[in-house]
Length: 105
Image 1 (cartoon, rainbow, N blue to C red):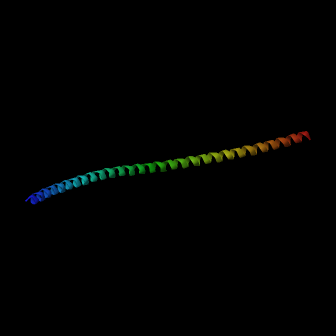
Image 2: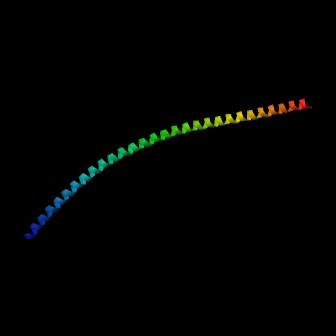
Image 3: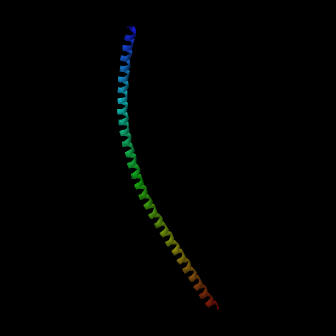
């Protein structure tokens, strides 16, 4: 008899443990699902932010290219202006030298 009573109590405790484990598993599944939903929304937000950043970078690169082209054009114009000034100065100095030589001789 005592053995049967112990066995019955053991079965009851086992059933209680199984019920508790089932409840814990259900809670864990619910918590994990909620956490995954939150994680998915955060991942979506990061994707949006990265996409926005990529667009801004593309815009920045375009502006930088335009600035580079403008700077290159200004540099070329400055070089051309300096070359013209040098040629004009050399021609003027040569003409003056010939004029002085003509008066002297």
